Image (cartoon, rainbow, N blue to C red):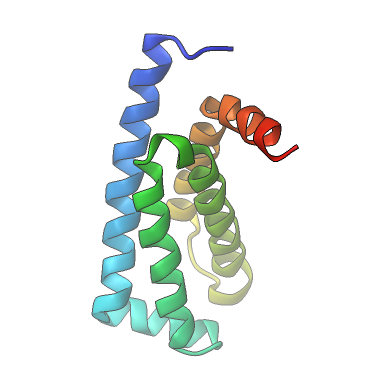
Length: 125
């Protein structure tokens, strides 16, 4: 299956939007925005996890914009948001709405890029 121009436009729109959002979220974590410090203190693992999460988000944001890595980055960030939803529901006891929206958007982009996974599988086998 080859992506049609309409899918490409949607794909690029999602890529850019997600890249901006994840880069901003990662930057806020690295900058030590008080809300981020507080959230990771509530999680209870330690502030080192805030920096790891920031790195995951920033690396994922960059990878979204690299055509051959978009699908993998979307899965990577979708998985990150899945665990963010779990953390919001069971640890933080807070509204997971933002994480759910980002999970759905990342998953949708991964689905749009599903052809990349077939190509990757062929290269690896």
